[in-house]
Amino acid sequence: MKKFVVLFFSFFALQLGAQVNDWEKYADSLRTNVLDDGEIETEYLLPELHINFSKEELERIQIESILKQRILRVYQYAVLTSHNLTILNQEMAKLEKKSQKRKHLKQTEKYLKEQFGDRLKKLSRKDGQILVKLINRQTDQTAFELVKDLKSGWSAFWSNQTAKLFDINLKTKYAPGDVLEDFYIEMLIKELALEGRIKYHPAAKDYKMDLVKANWKRKLGDSGYYPEEN
Image (cartoon, rainbow, N blue to C red; front, top):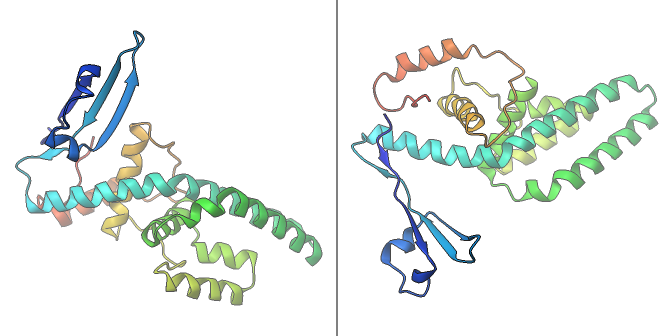
């Protein structure tokens, strides 16, 4: 059983003109609804209160909470970018003339920039690294390998060095069996999909998650770092 309490309060129009209560300062979200009869209902959602958690559990909860937000920000981009880059590589392989390849590449780059450029610029460095991992999850190729297939190895090298300046390594692989953060991500992807917050797309590679979960359970034991499963 989950060991947390969620406090939820609804106040109607009578209270809108009243003095703001201290707890309202800490409301996690605020939503105002206009009811059918014209009255205004205001809802305050307070943060979860975690009770009787160990230090390890609290650390895991914090990590998972941050990862959830990052996944929600980049997951759709990972799926769409992976899809477009895979198709682009397939189309480029069919073309024989360099002029045709250059033209097709420019058209695709223009499309990707128009579709995702501005939105991707708003991502943080850590969001970008999670995106790189998820692209690897969706294609079983690193972002570096995908770029290398499209351009020269020299261009891919410089792309990788530039990315490193922003703490993003394009050669990073998604490894839920070896990296705890990636294990959390894989578990959270399925959790968010079950909640209907993202559309689940299976990984290109079979990570044998039953074995992965068993291995992490053995490594983490009852420390609190092992995630709860729905």
